Length: 73
Image 1 (cartoon, helix red, strand yellow):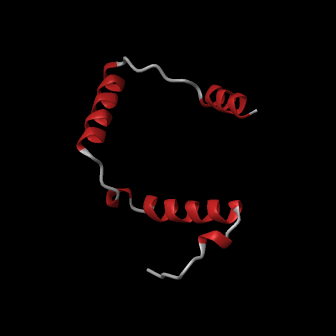
Image 2 (cartoon, one colour):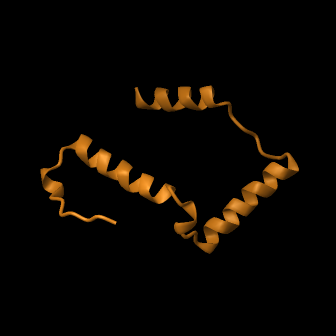
């Protein structure tokens, strides 16, 4: 792992977002390294149970995207 000093005050918004993205990507390379709380595990189990029982209503991706875009404009 490489480390270097970063003066966050000198980074613009785009550079800060790039840094966040890099940090996030470093975590998602191995999701098992990100611990879940008991509450998160229970919620995931609850959602999986709903899906397996056929009780979960999904929304098509294009509809989700439209909803997000309408909130941002």
